[in-house]
Image 1 (cartoon, rainbow, N blue to C red):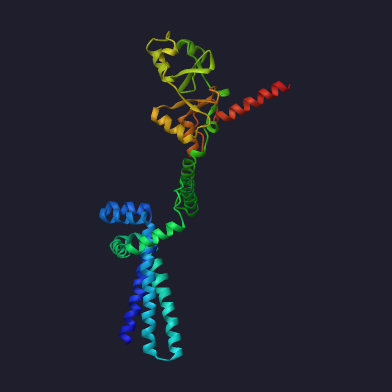
Image 2: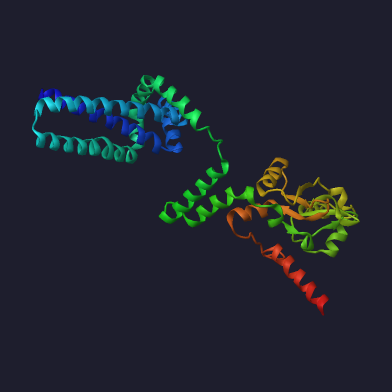
Length: 349
């Protein structure tokens, strides 16, 4: 009878410990670790990925087996213990207390801590046992899934909450030292591009540099010997009629080739327009798709509001201004504000 009792205890704690290990492992393993396992052991990696994606069914299978093992095990162990110890009340109480502590430590605390700490190593060995558990518990898992779905309808995946989680992880990484503050800021700023409006980062029209398309190349260099911008919008009549853009290097090439009499309209390239209420991530995708470095920003009425360069979006991601010695100002938006304030002071006088 004693051997039967020991076997019953061992089996109960063993199955419960396996379930706890499987549960902690599948919940704690990361997408990056699964991808790494897929590269080393493709079959096991893909199987584990499937179990992670179908987490609801996987958890139901594990919990079902654990509940069955604990319920039947407790009943069996209780019956055998009563036969072994008879009517000795103190002995049964001590046994029950020891059994409770044993289950708590050996089938809950220890397995779960080990599974979380060594999840990657355990995943390689436990993916097959997990597959067996899922297969054996499949009927019960499906019943549980249908029941849960009837009570709690599935929620749509929320991209915003996923992004917020990544941002929080990046900030946590910076605090713990696994990421530098600059790396954390890069992640945060990049993920917040979809909340950043073009009008917040563009160069306003008040400080926007543009050229009349009827000017010749020679006239441009006569009036502007040192052109500070790599790409310049071209206008017809006024700034609200942008017809294209010209590159500074094309102007230099024209002078070198003796084509200074050409109008800059002849060197013009197509320009793309971006609404000022568009998000920075959409503007970035548009610039990349069109292979452009500069776009003209328009307001809701179609009037020119300013210009947006690829550089402006990059500055938003890295969190600092990209400045060259020949630039007019470090921050063109700040320059626009100063000019606006200066004009207001002049009017007040």
